[in-house]
Amino acid sequence: MPEIVISPSPNFDDRGPGFTVDMLVIHYTGMETAEAALDRLRDPGSQVSSHYLIDEDGTVHRLVDERHRAWHAGVAHWRGRADINARSVGIELVNPGHEFGYREFPEAQIRELEAVCFGVLTRHPIPARNVVGHSDVAPTRKTDPGERFPWARLASKGIGLWPGEADHLETAPGALAQALQEVGYDVTDFQAALKAFQRHWRPDRVTGRVDPETARRLFGLVHLVRAGDPDYG
Image (cartoon, rainbow, N blue to C red):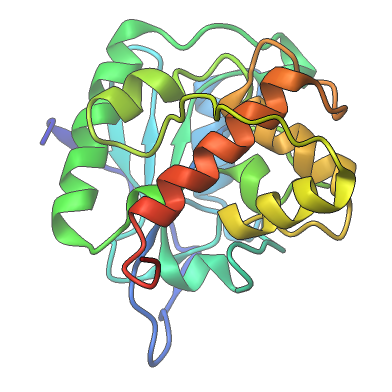
């Protein structure tokens, strides 16, 4: 675990009875500076926080203890469940985001993120399919951590999933919506869900439209999800 700067935020509460931490949600700050992001995450009036904030130089701030519910996901859904904050650890990465000049995540930042993630995954029973981005759980509202985030790299180290492409090609909207839902997406807005999937698993073509590689990769992900789910097979 990296050295951590304790930077307490007052924006948290109890997780509530019956909640087990089984999700890890990654964000970007979407603000112009790290200082502005840290101030906002610690401002009682903002009503937002996260468990960790990782600066571009790799400095790790702990804002909320993992025992508590940080307020990072907002209105969100995954695998048919809401109140994502109650069952997740949230990590914010300093990055100006799409509004203020979205850029690559520096090596020092990603290296420390990996270390933080390994610690979280050691402490909580989080399946690989539940390592997601903010845009995955709130596809109509959010775009972070975005298409520049190195999901494939993290998956290669055991943090999340990265699918190959399925052999068959299925492009019927109904089948694709069912596949997205099986992965975990709320498909009330199909195009938004598909675009969120692309941001995570097909980042070179984030269009919200079906193309053969998107379809094959989606069904490849379904195969991985089923393979890792004890309720299947």
